[in-house]
Length: 259
Image (cartoon, rainbow, N blue to C red; front, side, top):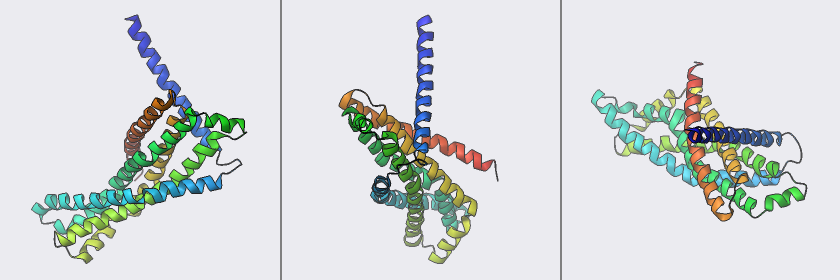
């Protein structure tokens, strides 16, 4: 009985320690934004790597999401004779929820795990210690630059996802459902409110912060050589996905509390 209580206590202390270390890392990365040196070239490289490199995957995600929504939405609306309004369903669903979440999950799989594995490899090969020996702050050089790139580019990638999803829905609506293009696009844009656009941009920025910092945390705290690199990569992907879904719920409740 005492052993079980001790194990539970140790586990809770471990979780508290992880939260403390993660918070400290976030604070140091944010502090790197306001003090020199600013690694502009490294930041631009990360923007290109994270943004341009992820365009293809978010285009595919958006296209198939819009097409599936059009097919399923038409089935649900057909008994009410409201199939023509399927574009309203697609645009509101994508802009408010599906676009930001699906894009973030795809990017977490590609970018977040990549950040974790890259920094973890530097950790186990003692490159991070070499940066410190040279007088370079590894958190500012590695974490802050990736944080800026993710927070800037993931909202842009989400906008691309939303546009492609609505376009994919139009393909199904026009070619399969026989809905006039004018009515489709008119109802699609009419259904989107200014509040939806704000929510659809705030969420990706938060998701970008989560993806960058979880990946950096997993990388900086890697142990155990090459085996640890694999574990850190997996940990980054799983943790990012869970935090994205949890924060999506919390942000949705927050925005609903302020109509």
